[in-house]
Image 1 (cartoon, one colour):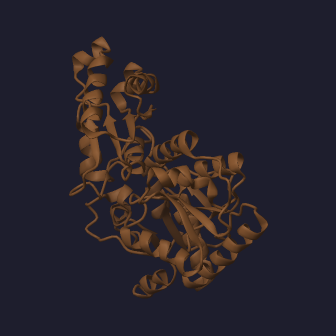
Image 2: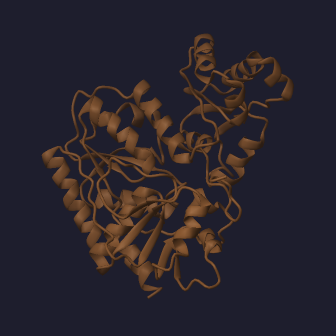
Image 3: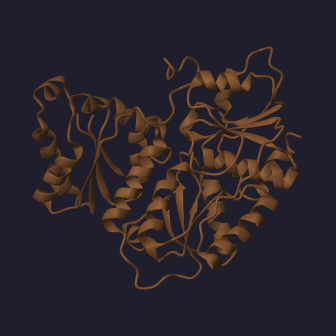
Length: 383
């Protein structure tokens, strides 16, 4: 019962993560389900969906198809869509029912690729893991298949890994890219905000990977192992923290070594809730700009290989509720939906930092940019 949600909506799942990662590509994406998962993604997990022309389809899985294992029915639908739309890529995405009946998504993808001559990727997503896992799977598959060994490196070239609207509003994504341009850093590829197939192919030309969410860690480790590209794990949140981040960027570029800046939350009175990389970066920003210590409450699991202290694994509703009501913290930073876990007798200030992967459209609070000095301005309004 640990994963039971009584008060909170379920967080974005892995199949939504795959769809988010490939959203900007010229591809046909098919979620193999009976339409519930597709509706969940398009209605609640994708802020870019309405008004877009992205080709994301539902296979229309029915009980008889599941019983008989009739994969050919879905294959024919995909072939028809590919013939009509002429995509560069076809992507098949699993859901809970294909998981239960053991559908071989990768095998079906290989069959479709053989028939069409169009690259086809299959993902055995289940809906039981979080969106960050799906994004990481999609980015890894794209890199393994399409990223080319570079003839040269771009000296100040960087990739952004883990930049998706599930974690970053459009303002934060734009401010992050602007911070690169203002400091003479060339953006080579952005996974996955504004991603193109050309960007995937040339990703190894970068001299540094900037990991800005948990979904970017596995791709960063892959690019380091295969192409020798170091990575930096931090979002520049706070004025002084952004200056420290720029120093770390140049240190990584010059020394060609990976770096995970970290601090401790000793005697912390602030709890930050969300993606681990976001929490760690907020921890660094609060320390550098305000001299405040914070604990990281990671809602989507933790990365045990990363250094640092005061990292709490709060991957289910009960653990989150216990943490926010433990009496240790005087302030909590997180998505507005998490307010409903605070008991009436708990005295704590709550700072809203909306996250689409948690509350979607239901928070009632528009997304904010927390990059650089903007975080200082946001926090000043509550002090």
